Length: 373
Image (cartoon, rainbow, N blue to C red; front, side, top):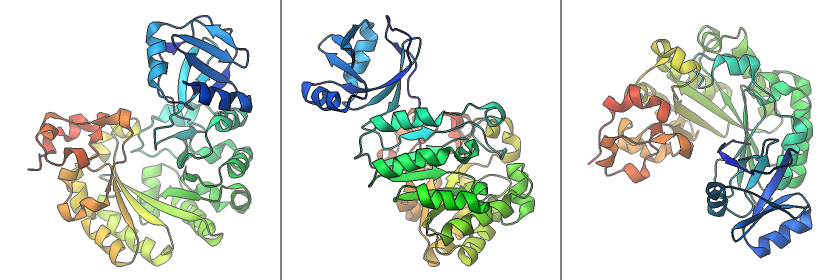
């Protein structure tokens, strides 16, 4: 799952990697002891590691940090004693990170190319171990990468575990969809995916010349469209994502035409403003388009989808860059640690309702933001 902190540490740790749940009171401690899955128990100013019931030495900073966390939060403890938060009970943005590798190399991707080529895989056994500690009543979890299905068929062992344990949790799979052009993978997904699953797949152009130029992968549009068709055929809920960049902004209307004509049964369409890190930062002259201009170019596409009965969501757009009658479509979609507000935002009457902007995008976008009075 997502790594949220790196500086907290058990000073006298024994060197064994493990996953633990956090207990901050005796009731939760008793509950976690029954599960025998491993626990970090904070008792006053002392920290104990279970099932060994071993007292551990931690700094005052680490102790304070743990006390500020939540019962049932899940941590990895690394061989050097570092404590890494992997599941936050209070967050609605928890995720399992499967691999940094990807079989596309989108020029506006917020991840760098080196991650695509040399990114690490998370061992499926480790993913299952983490999932064993996550409470069954969690409302939402994202499965992400890279391209998570690139690790091969072993991912379906993980999905099968999730399906058995989490009967009510909504799972969002972020994938380029190309793997689902292969029937075997579609069949395995149908057999193992949790009941409440949504597969989110991006389309970058209405024709291969645009889409494949953005993904830097020949035939990727053909594979993606076939993947979407195959998933819809087996009854999978599908979200289509449109990331607006300079290369496809004027084609978004054509993409929505294609969606309405070929995939009318999809769950919804999400239209995203870019996060300018990784490949997007390297290629910013080719891909950057100010958020306000991006919205102006997609407005007709949004109207077309809505009139066709397809739900639309707008991600990563500050409210001041969007016409007010579309504000209800805007989601607070940026992870808390990435959100930034500039001085102009402090004077805005809609700041509390606005999702802000990405930290990596402030420099490019700050002069275009205007306070709403």
